[in-house]
Image (cartoon, rainbow, N blue to C red; front, side, top):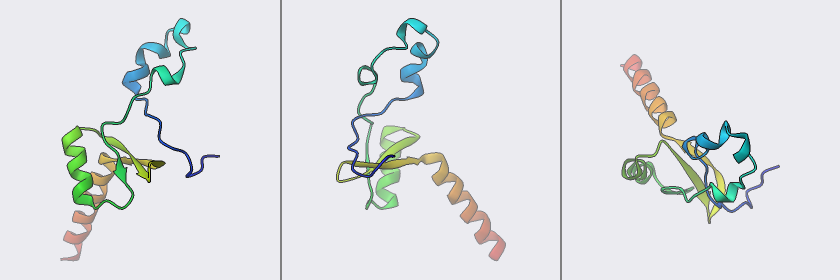
Length: 95
């Protein structure tokens, strides 16, 4: 069970493990040797303007959300865009 007391130690992206996934000789590689710091972290209380600036500056599509350095989850840029498009569509329907 994942609790909110877990500090974010690093992230692993598909690109990080692509060369390992299909090489049985490398499957025992410790994850600590693969993970790295995220390009940015989103604090739970940040506003969307700050969040979008971090996505723009890092060109990332997913960023971890933390509270006092403790991992809460990931925020996806594509989900933000989907929600924005949905809101635009709904607001046009109401006009």
